[in-house]
Length: 493
Ligand code: ADP
Image (cartoon, rainbow, N blue to C red; front, side):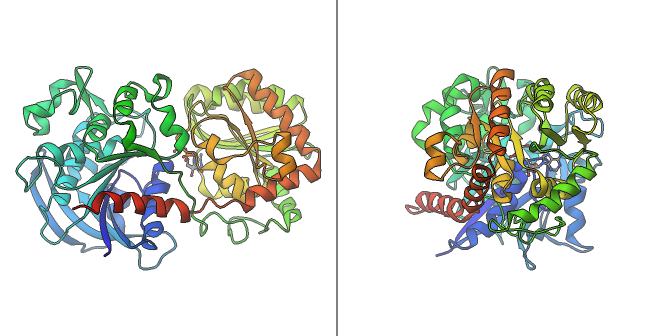
């Protein structure tokens, strides 16, 4: 029997993306189709999403007042590399979502002041749909992603649309893509949420006297997943759990990690249209054309040391402050750096200053540019990911697929997906990158030095590239793991 899953998320490629969450949500329907799981994705009706629905989209449901806002449920399709696409539901609530700016922030980078209402209404609608409130739609399980979808599970638990309030109507999964974002608000908003008083409890949505949307979802879900086994262990500790470590520990047996995959139709150096020269693990020499083009694009001089690339949000989480401190060392050991990213203003100007200090050695692009990120992976020698914490991380997986050797901190999904080039791993031919412990100037500088040494041994370097390109980080295994999880939760119903 085909299982029918409602996936609830605030972003999904190819329609709206601010980070890895969107890649995962966009890839899941295709990854699950092979396992007899039919996934429907519910997204907020941002302009970029409603624009894909055509002039006369099918209206499946209307709400006169969804937390006070008129709203409609529209039907569409979403798909990457698939002509017919997968089922999409769009919550069209113009008062909440039809505005210019980002999904969570306005044009100046400030959080929308009504984010609580936007994502509470989104959760309320998701619970109505999953709870049987839309007659034409039935689901076996609801899968919520991150804090923006957390309230869906709280509404289902405490105030299901058509149920008697006796508990969740459906089994549920919540996936934590990043514990650092939790959706905290003041307790004064509680009356506006339309939940019964018992929801404002320590095992409900209450969090240190306020409300947490992520906690609401974690407390209500049948199962909790995160995006790598190491991160699933790390969030039991205060440094990673960000205040929710107690809850994670209390639900220990119900928390697991499933590593994200990447879509080989999008991330494949042999067929990548963004590259000047396509290549395979057997024809790595063809990367040289891409490298020269990349050097030219970033205004870099030629050199015999490695060309490091960075594709990242410029934030503390990503260790970008430490990389900035180590930039002079990087240049000093004969390497070069091409960086693409945006984020904290101080880091953006810091990297501009580093590029000005080292013309021809450091090139910086501030912004978001998908095609450029492909060119960097196809031409760079090594990709740097010095994150302080990293639930899964995708760019190191792209690096592996492109023979752009990942140099990563040993945390979360980075620890799970990169095999360090220590002597034993190299002798066994399984090493795929460089790992280092603890994100500090010294540890990063040592890792950079070690990478330059490895690069200067062409046979050793080729072996790292080939082992990475041979590793399978497509969705095959992880799609099956999600399917097995859904089946284990629905089998007894
Ligand atoms: P996070 O979700 O924490 O930002 P991930 O590594 O999981 O980190 O996912 C980031 C995604 O966003 C990747 O697909 C990466 O290639 C992409 N990305 C990040 N910054 C940029 C940028 N400036 N330009 C293009 N793509 C970017």
